[in-house]
Amino acid sequence: MDNHHPPGPLQAFWMAFSENRGALSGLYLVLAIIATAILAGLIAPHSPYEQYRDAVLAPPFWAEGGSSRFLLGTDDLGRDMLSRLLYGARVSLFIGISVMGVSLVVGIVLGLISAIVGGLTDVIITRIMDLIMAVPSLVMAILIVAVLGPSLTNTIVAVTVVYLPRYVRLVRASALAELPKDYVTAARVIGVRPLRLMFVTILPNCLAPLMVQAALGISDAILEAAALGFLGLGAQPPTPEWGSMLADARNLIRSNPGIVTMPGLCILVTVIAINLTGDGLRDALDPKMRRS
Amino acid sequence: MLKYVLHRIALTVPTFIALMFVTFVAVRLVPGDPVEVRTGEHGISPERLAYFRHELGLDQSIGRQFLHYAWSLLHGDFGTSVVTSTKVTTEFFTLFPATLELSFFAMIFAIGLGIPAGAVAAVKRGSLYDQALMGISLVGYSMPIFWWGLLLIMFVAEGLHLTPVSGRIDLIRFYFEPVTGFMTLDALLSDQKGAFLDALHHLILPAIVLGTVPLAVIARMTRSSMLEVLSEDYVRTARAKGLSSFRVIGIHALRNALIPVVTVIGLQVGTLLAGAVLTETIFSWPGVGKWLIESLSRRDYPALQGGIMLISMVVIVVNLLIDLAYGIINPRIRHG
Image 1 (cartoon, each protein chain N blue to C red):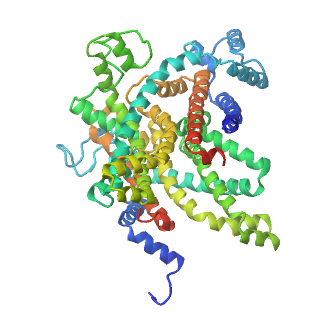
Image 2: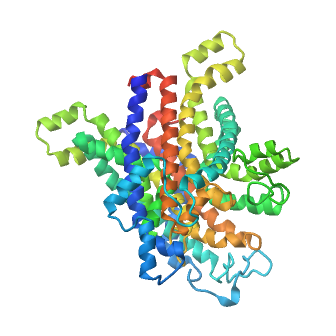
Image 3: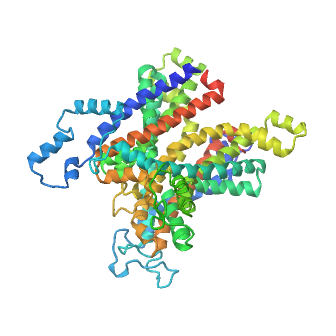
């Protein structure tokens, strides 16, 4: 590394980020979970759908009667828990990242339009966002899923709608703060077209808080989707989704605590890892927040 | 001030109208025919179908149905459940005290524990206690509360038999007519020995589950707000005057640090009502959250529609009140 120059922005960011032990361990955990999700097909010892009728409710390997055939035991249909949990990482991350991606893009577009066009357009967009925020998130998501029918795709749609206002309001507020600045006026004076003004001139200056929101938005989306799954309104069986696995295991609370514990633990660990990373991102991007 | 109040109230009107429109449209789009649900008949005769459709107003044009719906809402009529034939408002307000009571105790738990915990963490910044608390609160706000509820049932209720598993009171031992709808108050009013304690006992687990996320948020917010205030000049002045550190921290600093915390507490109202849906489902708590889910699975359109309207109105009104209260505490806002 060349130490004679001041660090570039990326390097400075990484230095700030990697100072934070919590953020760093969160990031490693997130990377591990992503790897699990991608490699689920290779690591999983069984198919997540295959029902082993000879081994229904097999205990995990450490318990009495457990075997190395089903390391974490099987569920009430004889499906391998470990394999279902591994594939579950795929489902949850897919939901989290899709929701984040869609709401980020739509949020940026609506937020920028709202800030730059102003007038009636702004009022309409802001009012719609206020409306979505007025309804408790899960209730709104339930309403949307009720209309569209429960499925993995509709879970993503519902959770995206619920979290959209955060992105729109964030982009709108930061764009409004940028608009009166001289560089924007200068760009306008030299005749920069509106689209270029929006995405090339203004947007890059609003990115820092947006990245933090996006990172934390993934974990919120995963939680919300799991809650829908738990209520039977999310991914439908036999999809190995952690929330719906919990719902299936509810009546086994007395006999098989393990089946109830594991999917929830997976949700918790994933969400913690993403939140740690997101918090670290915020501290690294916003020097004012650091060390507090 | 009056201008601010009126302006703020006027702002809720379009939200309310839009909400009316959205619930109306959404509920019409839900698959499944309400007539079939109500009569429980498949292949119902066309005459009977027409009769029921007429009775429910479903044979009119969509526009007329909407106007009718809006008109009724303005008169406080949120429709009638097609399953129980009870007014939606009656059902809602019978069940709402249960949700309110649960939310109230969840908030007591969250505030009572969160503010002192966060304040102490700020004072002992960087200590082991501070780090542990931040770690715990990270777990708290990352918690899937439906799983947390199941865990507590599994270990505390089923395993250690410390608390009941579900419900609001032991119905075998205690029975009394609801007066206020709040089980704890009704139990006190009933003069039955042990009823109040039993009601509280039933509240412990659900209140902890519902209060966990707000607790984590409040503790974090108190800590960071307190840290900011502790570095202010007036705190140094108070110290320099020789005031006891309890007075400096507990009175001078904490009071000012609490202003943003109050906002955060207000923002938790939506979180609480959303969380109530899950908590009530897990603990068979007969509140509006559980009722909403049941209405959905019974395809009870009017109940779902009215219920969502009423819940959202509660959130809108509470947010309005918080904004107004905030305008009173902080004059800069109402002139902004």
